[in-house]
Structures are given as structure tokens and as C-alpha cells.
Length: 198
Image 1 (cartoon, one colour):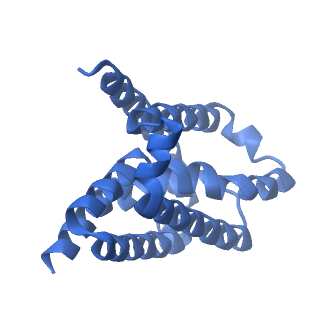
Image 2 (cartoon, helix red, strand yellow):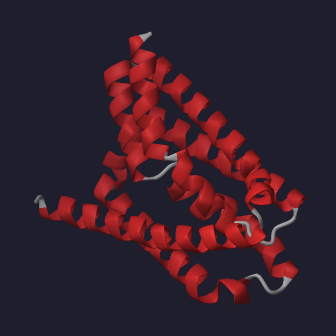
């Protein structure tokens, strides 16, 4: 049982569901319930597929393609930084046309929600380390439980919005975008430090 606990806790921290939820609300502001349902399913399925790929073939893929975790940190950080700046500055314009919001759901669920917010460099590293330390089965169970918690958390997102009110939700979403920019900078910094070996 200790292997399951040791596999679960680091991945739970790496995914950071409490920090993910405000960002999800920010990204889906103005989306209909049907769009949010589709986006949740798309995000969790995509994140699960990527996690499974990392679990069973991650080290081989990294070695063949010459990719390191630091590459993921810098690349993911640049994506998040671009999206957070766009949301902070152009968020109102981006959501003006409902048809644009419909188009957004085709990509938002994959990038940035599934990758790199749910399964980012920290989660990928955690999965690789857990597989080596705890084995395939405990790591797989940990992934399944954590992704189920993510799905339930995203499912509760609109309810939280109704409880706190739309104005508060918008304010939290903007603050979340600011923190998302900070997270992006931290990811880029960690990648650069890793490159330099400091």
C-alpha cells in the first residue's frame, strides 16, 4: 500500500488541482454547458492518453527524440505565457463572438488544459520517477485516481461560479491568468537553469 500512496501524493501535488480550477474557469468563461462538458472530456482523455504514453514509453521517446524535461519546461512555459498574456490583454475581444468560443473548445481542451496544465513537465517527471520507484501498477492507479479527481474538480467549476457570483468569478479568472503568467515564467526559468546546470 505504501507504493500506492507514494505514487499518488507527488502526482497530486504536481497536477495541482486547486491551482488548475481558477485557470479552467478563466479559459472557459462564456462557454455553454455543452461546450464545457465536451472540453472536460477532451482534456481528461487527452491528459490520460499522454500520461499513459509517458508511463510506458516516455524514457524511450525522450531518448530517441533527444528531448529532455528542461525542453518541456521551456516549451510549455512559452505556451502558457502567450496564452496568459492574450487572456489578460485581449480576453474580452477573444470572447466577443460565440462562434469563436465554439471554435476555442476544439483546442483549449488539448492546449493548454490537458497539456501542459494537467500533464505538464512536473507531472511527466513525477510519472517517470514513480514508474522507476514504485512500479507500473501503483503509478497507473495513481494516474487514474488523480485524473478522476481532476474531472470531478472541473465538473464542479460552474457550480463554484454560481455560488461566488459572476463578478467574483471574473476577478478570480483574471488573477488566475496573472498567476498563470508567473507559473509560465517559473517553468521557463527552471528549464533554463536546468540547461545551464546551475
